[in-house]
Image (cartoon, rainbow, N blue to C red; front, side, top):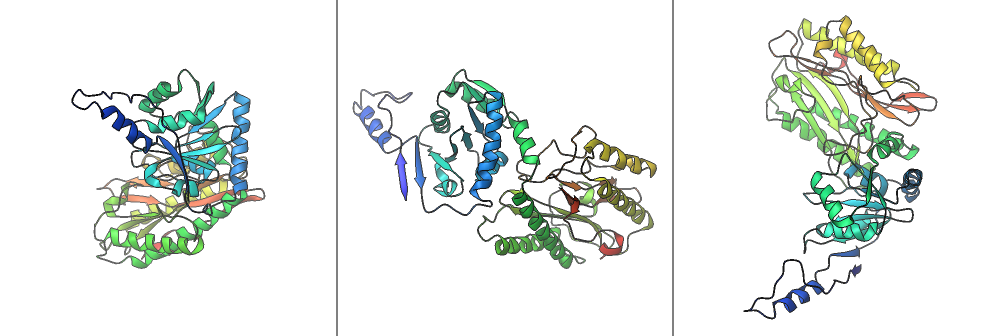
Length: 433
């Protein structure tokens, strides 16, 4: 174990006073400060094996530094889970505390809370510094030490709160602040070969979770029990296929009946009934990387109108898969599927956009909002992008065919064409249970 502590300044701590009854109080406070540093380093154990080689992180940092140089940015202060994980490999657990990765042209240093011990250093590709809870705002003191006298600072404008923006001004002074969130998102949208390999493996594991979910479906079973079967199957496979990873954050949303009307509706204890529409959603998480499998299922035979709506959504899904390719424009793909649903008088039941990017994201953090199949996104698809096709229709309760219908596949745009990496079957011919 290697531990280095910053030397505390010998000054009267803010707000402290010597009491007439305790003339030695100041000396006691100063003595306590000697063993309660603001920041320190803790190289406890050996560096962990990260999801990617150090050269992968160096390449990402080199691209960020090129952006910094082009915009005259001296230092970048990354604060989001997705960007810190992307550039350093360390995926933090905030629990109300702030974290950072400070990037200069020469160094990359994660800033973590003392409660995490040496784990952030082990999981960071490069350097790490720890801040303590002994004094308020030690996080910002750690950041200030790393930022130094920078004149221009890059921040994530879509992540920094007003409170933290005020703290930045208090501790860093009149530094020129530049938003680099968009540039980092654009970089993350194009996956490396190593990222795509991980994403393909994760999609395979999502299919394993889906099979476990289907195997647990039976009349009277609770949503939560079925969801746990899928989650357990995925975590077992992740621990087998990625033994050096931290096993965390994988989940399943299994919804039934009325609960299928929202794509992100939480799992409940509702018991399945014959005739239920079901929504299978498995999400394996590997080192912050998200994939998904989503399927409409039915317990028992669906009614005629339900079959019509389900089949229409399947046709929209297949149409979308056929037009996802290099050179296609996100908004154009959306418009074509809109036209299809309008021709079936179903467009008014569309729930959300038709797909989104994949990478370091989850329901806790992250989103590459520049790569989504929506009317207001005009990004052109290019090799290295990974995007889903996931049309959803929600028919309100009380109408024929009520429920939420959704199919979801993941497509990798490769140099020789699009590749669908989801293998789980879809549609009425496969998923009436």
